[in-house]
Image (cartoon, rainbow, N blue to C red; front, top):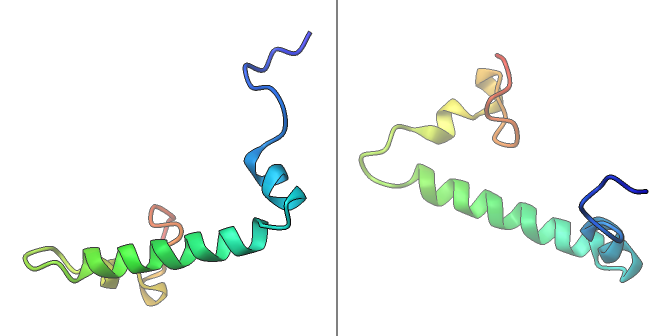
Length: 67
């Protein structure tokens, strides 16, 4: 018996079967980048974009990675 509470394939598998995986992933990356820019541009906020820059040893994709 399968101990997983999830049945069927993953969303990634479904999108690949429909030839939509790459397109969907590219759109998601663009939306996250736009959101990060809008968050960094908010007045009164610390400069999050500077904290997440690769020059500081961190990337926006993995903000909690060690420096």
